[in-house]
Image 1: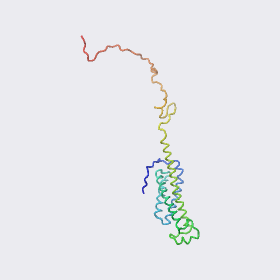
Image 2: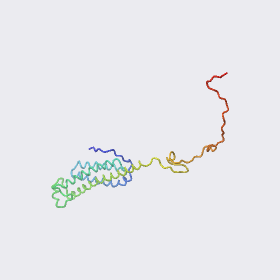
Image 3: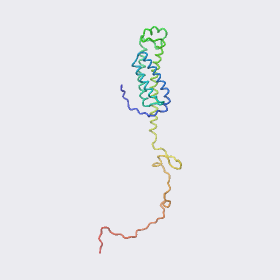
Image 4: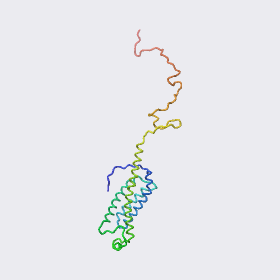
Length: 221
């Protein structure tokens, strides 16, 4: 499935908001793994395999104690799509006329014994709890990824809006910054030759006292 989206630009290094949310993302990824186990338990091989792919992408995004910002955007979008479909599937299963309640009591044990795969009462309730928790974890991952993405875009925009010419400041008797040349008043330098300062010097004007000759002209007798 190809989703047409514009180019996503995020800063490569993880932001402070991303590093703060990293433990929560790790916990939610573990919950999605329980959801994958629940799907395999119900013999839903394709759904469990897709959930394992999301779990693998999540652990890859959170690898080496950091956070891959590029993978996080794709991972959050995949979790949102799968979370929506998993929630719709859960509602569809719960509203069927002959469907068992998600959390059944002892009176439904005989019904569970007649179903395949055969499950005990605590297995049925536990697997449905994993299902609900997995759907909530998928949606939560997408929300956290979106918030971290927006924070990253805001920080990137603030960096681009910073002035390229830094304000000058005095440092050790000198001038530091790019505005010392071309903007503002610059410090007055002492002249290299004190005698020539302000147009004053020891040299005086000497008029020309030689003779001139016409170039290319003939001498007249």
